[in-house]
Length: 104
Image (cartoon, rainbow, N blue to C red):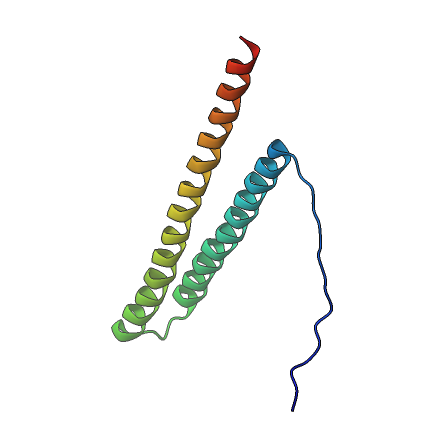
């Protein structure tokens, strides 16, 4: 059996540096919105669970552990987004500084 033929596809996207930075900022915002939906869903999960009057301590501990794990993962993701944002800010400052040097 021979290897499949893959066409020579070269997608070319041309972006200016400030456009790329804006896209990166937008991606952070969209990820934060997604994380906020996850946090909201975890809150709703707890509310549904609390409304159930037939719960025992074991059930409470299980739901607590489940929410804790999810929130830990959300926090980890937010830390990565913070690093990404700091890098974007640093790039923006570098760009501004480059333009100031060229203008002098």
